[in-house]
Image 1 (cartoon, rainbow, N blue to C red):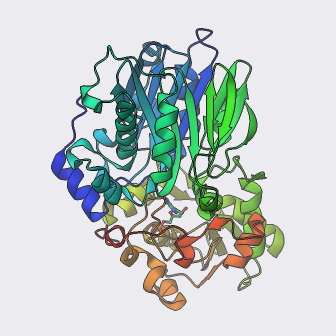
Image 2 (cartoon, protein in one colour):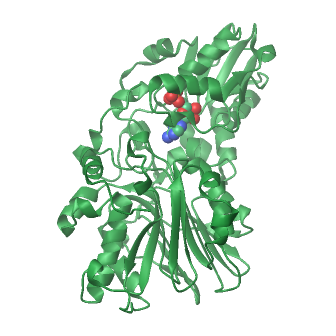
Image 3 (spheres, rainbow, N blue to C red):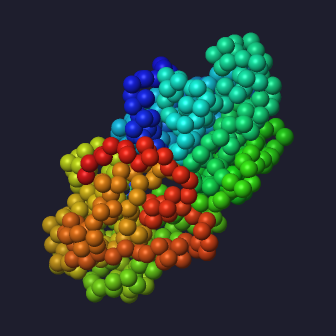
Length: 500
Ligand code: AMP
């Protein structure tokens, strides 16, 4: 498929901050050369990371000589079938699932991104969002014509550095030019310290797999071992599914290099920039409940969030229920702590994607009905406490409350297992701009009125930290506090409103 970008779309995108900002899933695998093909395992890994991105999926596979990239719009199971996977033989692969708003939903933004340099090439998958894309592109004299996204900038910068090492420019290096084995590593040592913002990366050349986490470690990344190789993934369930043993999380500011000699750890960033700030929202909502983050199982932290939540604004009710799936763990904790029975009141159609990404408000509301239905026997005539992890725009929550009322709930008390979501994320979770965030400008009473609930309470930040077990400041809670650990340029704050 055509790799050339749509200049207008791309330029506008980068300029107004509506550029691809994704909370994606990344996966990498390398086994002993020519022992087995890894495309099916990459598929399985991406399938386990589907929740991190449902817009597009892709993988790059190397057989040691050449790299083949296959990517397309849609879910992992729509993009790949057995025939495609069989046509991607190799012992080394990186893969990606992408999530973003519809505004930047184009084939060209699908990953991995690829650049050919001499007799080699580089493929890269990125979870996160750079905060210095424009400045860096400008500084490097890289034209927007050559760029699709911040991830593309990283690939372009790397290719430029490799070509510079060969005394040339990327386009001018023909296939017959041999790259030094360490060319990519040398380029990474130059490029990585120049990047600002959030980046958990999987990168490969034709023989080497590399995993990198930015100095703040905004997005997760972990390392696992196979009998004959290694795996890198955004979340540990992607290791489990391919039969890899979890070794450890890759540290903030660490680069892990996997080749025929095994695994090496390098720190390409200045020591003073390393400052762990894992996204607190990974615990609240984004990561799978069975993921291990900072040595904790995410489900357990969510259950504890519910336990703490039961202390704020206690209310008498007949049943505690969670909004499936994201609110269920906290509802279990809430019920245990409050003594009010836990029950199921909402059923989710498990074949439907996340409603949050529906393009306009009307279709988001319809999408809630498509996604959720009620268990009337558990709701009619009952005083209901409904627990969810967060409210962003409030659209789906409002529709869900309406469903409960229509089913005959006599009272609906909403409990949210995180503090009010007031600020946009610029480090890899695509959220609306501030005016569209329900809690950004409204008082608690106004939120309650808007959602038409009898009462509402949120978990406070101290309790959220306690539930996760954060003792110091090693987390990013910018979406809740407005304190951004890495400077965000003004133009990124002014992205166009997506509309409630
Ligand atoms: P809304 O009422 O429209 O704000 O939607 C609230 C729902 O969105 C909650 O159930 C959350 O679990 C979910 N949610 C929170 N953050 C995100 C996100 N970044 N992407 C998709 N869904 C989200």
